[in-house]
Length: 404
Image 1 (spheres, helix red, strand yellow):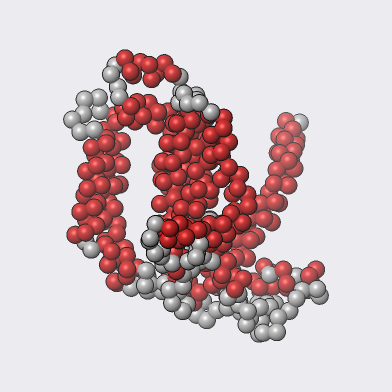
Image 2 (tube, rainbow, N blue to C red; image 1 turned 90 degrees about the vertical axis):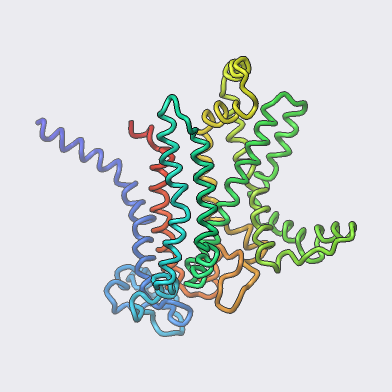
């Protein structure tokens, strides 16, 4: 009887979980398998329809399934097959990454940023010491100074230039990471500053909260608002017209790679800072005022209160917001595509100056219709983000409480 009750328990659990398992298989596992398989094929606008005589194609591609075979659209080109050589899509994307010059450039970059990892490790050890001659902040300052020194001594700009000549994957991912590295800290600083102001005793706080939250509401129609930003920075746009009034000949913002990149960063910061502001404001209001009163009695100044009380106590709210913001920034599409369409173009067959990950994937699929290369690119990005996510979970310990 007890054996039957045990089996019944497991059958009940399985039946409850079965819809979720089926949904995961259909909407997660199957797309990953299909995407991975297509990345090894020559599928493009010249080879759009499948060769159903190949076992894996017949198994994975819905166009080969009996239920859809009669109504499946067929292209006029030859059926797609496995690429020759098999890794040609990956080889095109990675290019010269595994050649000696590129590997040496990667090694120089790792050596340059190694002091920051050392500062992170030593900083954690300094926190455990009660009487420490060197503070955690001093450890980070030394780490930054050593990194800056290595940056120039090892000629890192030349190493980055060599990496940017390897292939599309490195170029697109590097620019996307640079965008995230600029956008997220600046968004945090602006959100923190505004949250501190709104949390203080100022008149009209409700009005300012509504006004400062407007950009977040406008992000729901990001494409339309991004077109407004494009109009502002056109050659004859509002910004240049204002500069003309004071006798300055404005630049062609969206035709200059650096300026166009800056415009996209500025526009996306405008869309995103309210999220940080609201998250930090909620965390600030949960901090007891007695802590600040006790700090003032002990003679702590504003910076000491910010670094020793405010920032540590809002950390549980800021870390998830920072991770989520980093993910959305990495996947950013609408703002860049509406303002610059990935441009300005820097050469035939080369990604544009603002052609980030999602913009590049969109162009490969809907403009070039190079499905094999686009799916190979997606596989590489998936592997990179999976590793980065595991590392971020280990560093931030966001999910630590869920397993205790």
